[in-house]
Image (cartoon, rainbow, N blue to C red):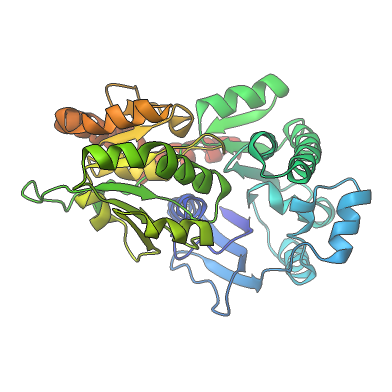
Length: 393
């Protein structure tokens, strides 16, 4: 079986949530399919995946005058137009003309920028969309917390255009992979006949098994992309509404902020007493092994958070808003502690050590049974092969 994957990002190194999902799902697909990948790279180095044939392309410049004009007066969302690259489009045409592919896997709605090539040269080839998020929902939520009125107007218009595209794709014969049952239910409400399957985000549980019980836990941990608006807003909330009182009551406590591409406003948090902005790291496991608790103070955004699953796999107690746990089959009080207001966060973190062992064991068990990448990959393989009418390969 041959599968061609199109991606708006380099999946390697897998150092963000989207890259982690894509890397591990592609690796799982390669166990039973001949996999080719066309993807954008963000630097000069070509993308390399040891399990697939890969060609990578320089990511096109976004928000050019031409694209902005098309976004203003055309029918497509600017967030889709930004990913149109003629070099990749030409190579896609060549691949579809020369290769007998069974399916094309599209990593995110952004690759609908190549529908013209897929329609013209990929007739009869099944398309499978990997929904990292419901993109229209993500933009609607961003509009509710946008920093300016103009950002909100842009977000709402983009959400409207994205939803129109999503509805059209759902009404087709395409397959759709989503991260959670909640998202699957929402898409089925939009289009009852849509071919939708849940393939949750996962975690490499084996990578989080190295901690010894003798290692002392010390401090709080936030992990996430530090240029992502919901993460930045969550950190602002925590450092303003939670940290001053928490640090007053526990002056020995430290907060470590780990993640790529920290914005200036995140870097400035390193000036707060007790707060360390670590930034990007090669491996996150040692930071989880040291943490008393992992923080997920999110009030916007979408999808399911791999950082939650990483903390679960490491046996680290998680304190989160309800939204931060969205899409994960975990129960408050059993697998994590829920907190919304500043006062609730303070109290939860002051008593987390009482529940540490019990929460950690339950969360680790859930990660192993439901979210290990091998489990996710097995279930995804059954879904995709079933769609392609080849359940035995």
